[in-house]
Image: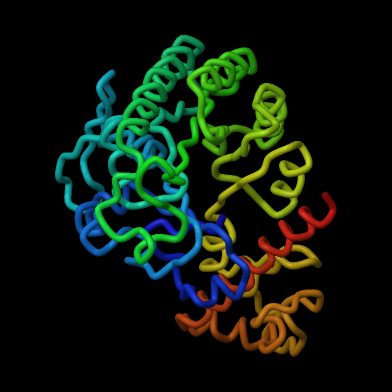
Length: 339
């Protein structure tokens, strides 16, 4: 899933995302809550209509963003009080308000509100955090069951897949936490499954731990997640890693890497990573990736892409992002084909 944090995949219009074959985008509740505001998006017909995206949307609960505001937040049993990174104003998110916000946005897949445990953390801290996430998961589930499908606009106009009433197709995913402790991950998975969700996510990774540890935790956790429900690994990874995680049994992934790296001139190709800012590409008339048939590789040379980046042209970021997204999506298509 390409990351469209603020109702946009930075630099790429929606028609090009469709052309690339993007089936589902990730939006961020925390950022949309602060700007333009959930009520504003609701009034404008929901997130699908607002951003003119007819395909599926997954929204994350905002838990990870609030976690990253360590100096600006206070966590209690009730929820998290935090200060906006935009203007310093004070806000409060709880399992109920985060779920309410995501229902209001009209997301097709809604994530339960969780606490992302930092790394490294003391065993007691990891246990306490996991227990809190489980209590919050239950509260998210209860609120979702009471309010799902309550979308105040014409669903046939405003949304891709969500309908109103008892046939509402909004889905709620639970999140497994437990830090790097494999026994806690097992317990968290089993107790999250007991609550019952439409899909299960592995959260709390890519927070500074070694990559080998990430893989170990993923592999151990997957063992305990149902095979007949989507299994979503949050916030990973390089093309090689996502292929590897898919092989282990992960169904869904998201990552800012293809878009963020693109804006810094780092491009993924079938021949390895290319740092397009390097002077050695200044006279290279070949395509970025001879094995890629995206609109960038079939039209522009490495020399031109390097020139755009060196000249700080906006088009550099746009073309780089389109290629990286295309490469990631092609990687996943190859994974699906091999399966």
